[in-house]
Amino acid sequence: MKVIVDFCLIPIGVGVSVSKYIAECEKILSDAGLKTHLHAYGTNIEGEWEDVFTAIKRCHERVHEMGAPRISSTIKLGTRTDRDQTMEDKIKSVQEKLQGI
Amino acid sequence: MKVIVDFCLIPIGVGVSVSKYIAECEKILSDAGLKTHLHAYGTNIEGEWEDVFTAIKRCHERVHEMGAPRISSTIKLGTRTDRDQTMEDKIKSVQEKLQGI
Amino acid sequence: MKVIVDFCLIPIGVGVSVSKYIAECEKILSDAGLKTHLHAYGTNIEGEWEDVFTAIKRCHERVHEMGAPRISSTIKLGTRTDRDQTMEDKIKSVQEKLQGI
Amino acid sequence: MKVIVDFCLIPIGVGVSVSKYIAECEKILSDAGLKTHLHAYGTNIEGEWEDVFTAIKRCHERVHEMGAPRISSTIKLGTRTDRDQTMEDKIKSVQEKLQGI
Image 1 (cartoon, each protein chain N blue to C red):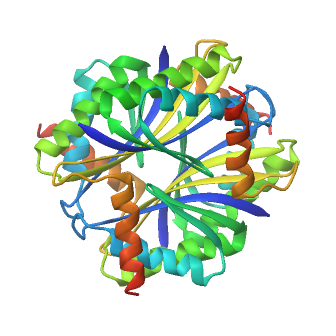
Image 2: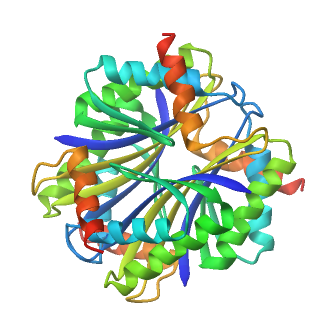
């Protein structure tokens, strides 16, 4: 089952600067061969369910290894059976409608 | 790795009433032996990472089987390595602090 | 416009224990006269849009005043125009369907 | 108080294609003079608290006017008092760390 995910991980108990943990997660997702897009409040991920959640679990494990005692992540997760849709399709679909407004 | 999760699934394209889909998910989570608490905007789940995400995947599969062509879920996901903590612990900890305010 | 909200606030940069900040937010929501239900990964809130978001803003302000330099909150937010629905209605509706499975 | 928000609105009860509703929200956010970035699972927004939430409320009102009887939105919301930070700063900070890995 293919999924489009938005993943936002927050390490807790390591101070106010969290970008080095997020960078490490970006590397894990990229090394897993997943299609990603980093934005200002998370990362879009496209891939097979198992691949995506294996990588997300690896992110939690790695951020704990880096010293974060606690992590809270927010994940949005979309699946559909009516048709195949990529992350680019979703954005393009909105942008096309915008031109008609 | 133990996780405490908040899971909220929204079937799209099946009209305005979604409770029968949520009920089916409750049953899947319960049949999986997971500890759960249904609230007004999702379900708290406590368990091992693999068990929890296997059950959440099963929820998506089942809701698609029931006829929903599209699903969007929101998941909050907490892990910690500093100590063991249950869902009840989290609530109790806040309630104790509340008494002191 | 009436809203049912799920609100989860995470103070960042104040260490691993966050319950005293959450307790303070519970007090703010309660003092605002809002109907709330604390669960293991956030708080359900029911009320008028303005009242709810004024209280949520007050939570951010207060948690900053308490010393948290950074806050990340996750909010789920439901509105409907087809009928009036309370937090209890939502839970009851799922529980009734569960009996029939 | 300045906020960086991630906003994802889901109209319920209007079928499987939701992009025209999202496009309308993009227009509302843009007309409000807010800085935005549309991604595959929501929209990043940067602005003053009042401006951002007034626009988000307007999105809910407008999508109801367009015929959606029910809406569920997910909002992530960040504030910080230690320093000023833009959406671009957040992304750049992660990308710089990525180069060092």
